[in-house]
Image (tube, rainbow, N blue to C red; front, side, top):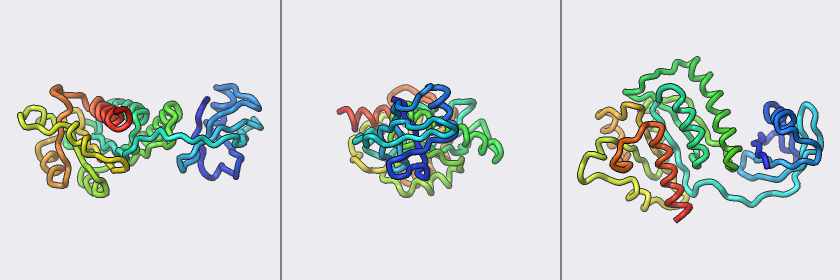
Length: 248
């Protein structure tokens, strides 16, 4: 059953109004008819099976059954991603959403090759929000992850102050004998805690950035003996989190 995220203003007791691109998708792409059922998500995380009662410019549907479902990760995970080249951030957003990330924060790292000006950032943010919305619908999430506007590393560190655990994968950590494993930190994380993961761009973190993160409460970790691409690191870590907290 297709799922749609509906703004709170379009919920009226047990009736839902669906507008814009979602209405077009229901009527023109899915070719739904009156009487067909869809799943509508409220911004508060609740979801309901709804029956379509009218298909015009907007779609009208009524709630038939509220769903008692919990598919979000048991901890809140924010992915701070050093700006990567090309469309790599699109992949991180899409797959990271499927794997349960709560929010994403792109940041300008010392070794980021790309630089976003304000005009480019606004255009990209609109696309990014569409990516996480569609990925949330596809993976039957209860919530759409928030995508923040790009920030600098000092602003990122300030944002991280409200989190319980802060880590960053660092390739130099993989080269030392007494390295700290990501798994050892995961074993200490408890449900409902907030985890902040900071990932460098293609060239990794500079030595100065790594020291700055450590000075502000971040733990450097190793993600196995191999060096992962920047677009692989977040997906590896989210997969490990899901396995550790949801499957074991």
